[in-house]
Image 1 (cartoon, rainbow, N blue to C red):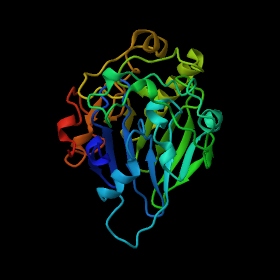
Image 2 (image 1 turned 90 degrees about the vertical axis):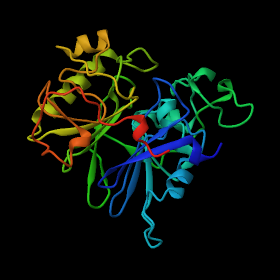
Image 3 (image 1 turned 45 degrees about the vertical axis):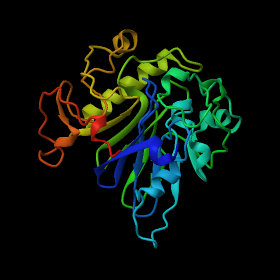
Image 4 (image 1 turned 180 degrees about the horizontal axis):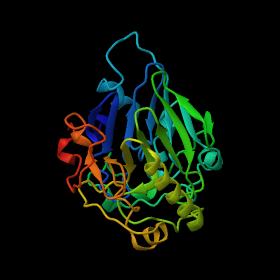
Length: 296
């Protein structure tokens, strides 16, 4: 199977692309984000790495069709788990939090939690492929990230927020000027997973509380671009971060993938961005876009 068949994408405007692995049909499937800047481009999370993500990006002109445009491309993992880091080895520039550098450099499939089954792969990427042979390939990070670091894309900046709990090196990337938050697995659609190697419940609670405070402190609504989305699920709410961790909803305030999140319980679907001002929050359970919206 070619990369063109394995992946699908949708342009969200302003140089932002949403990419998914079409035949990895699992609650673990991570969203892949491509964000273009004037001087630097960045891929946020890379999926399993079963087919070449750089080839797909190039073949579909996602970095632009100007032959003179030669921006460096940095691949950043929001954390080292296999569904986010499996494709990092395909890139020349790789960034990850300092706490998980060794796991990637050593190809540590315990810390990367490489739990993949045949039933999660709807169509095998190659004849005879079996999940039991899958491993996260070792890669030496070129960019070792810490809390407060800024990834400068030229016309936009991504600030690194260390949000441990799900893993010890989990990060969010915050584009403050454009009010975008790439949350990784700090928040996502479904149960909060806090029982993996190097997960820490107390850290997770602190990260959840920090995220809530971040959203509440914004003067305008913020687009939360989360991971591991079961596209189209209905939002959940909860009163406390501790309850959210123990009883499966994501976070207080209806924070879920692809939505514009303002004050708790208020949201604007991301697809309304062009027709409604970001500050005009409304109650809604409409999903932002379907898998059917992807370019196949």
